[in-house]
Length: 310
Image (cartoon, rainbow, N blue to C red; front, side, top):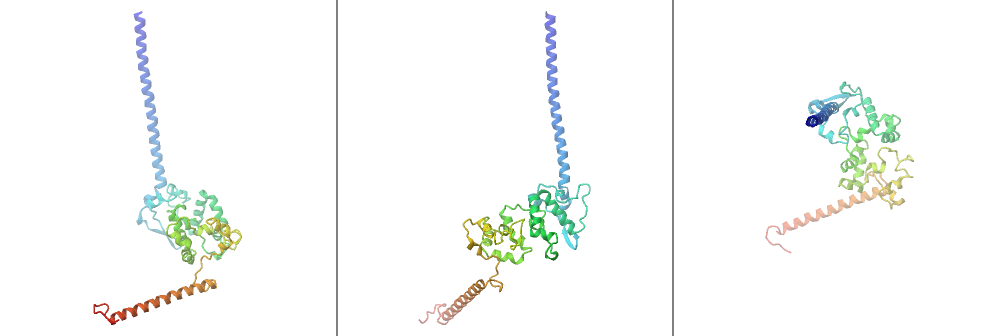
C-alpha cells in the first residue's frame, strides 16, 4: 500500500510540474506572439511612414526651391505642420499625386495640363459626387474648352487649395470664399463686401450668406440658365433657404452693383451721387464754419486769456 501511495504521490508531483511547465510554455508562446505582432506592426508603421510621409523629408525643407512648368514656377516646399492640420492631413501624398510611388518618387510633371488632369482625377477618386456636379457646371464646361475662348478654368485646387485644404464648414473658410472667387471674378469681391452679407461674414457671423450660398458650390451655372440657383425660376427658393418668409419683392435686392458706375440702375446712381454730394456739402459747411469760429476766437483773444469783446 505504501508503495502504491508513494507511486501515486510521485505521479501527482510530476503531473503538477508538467502542468506548471505547460502553463509557462503557453504564457511564453503568447508573449512571443504579441512581441512578434508588435514588431511586425512597428515595421509596417515605419514602412507606412516612410512611404506616406517620406516625401516631406525633402519637400518639407524650405530651401528646396521650385521647378518650372509651362513657364510658371511651381514651389516644391510643403509645410509639414500645415499639411498635417489640413483636411487631407492623414492621406499619403501618392493619394493625390497619382503615378508618384516610393520606388519612383521623381516622376516629373511634364506640363500644366497634365498636372491639372491628374489633380482632377485624384479628387474624383474620393469626391465622385462633387466631381460630377463640377463636370456639369460652367466651370466644368470651361475645363473642357467648350466656352470662353480657352480661358483657364478653375479646378478643385484653385478653390480648395492643394496642401492646405481647409474644411469647408469652418468660419475661416467661409470668410475666405469671396477672396477665392475674386481670383477670377475681381470686381465682385468689393461689391459683395458692400452688402450686409459681406459685412456680416467679415465680422464673424458664420450664418451669413457667401458666394456659394447663392451661386452654388460645385454646380455653378450662369443666371441665364434655367437650372441656375439664381435663375428667375429658382431665385426666390434660393433666398428662402435663409429667409423662409421672403416673397417676390425680396428678390429685387440688388447685389454686385457699383453705385457710382454709369452701368448701375438710374435710381441707384442718382441716390449715390446725391449721397456723396450731401457728404461734401455738410463737411465743407462744417469745415468753413469751424475755421471762421477759430479765426474769430483768435481775433478776440479768446485763446490767450485776454478776455474779448462780445
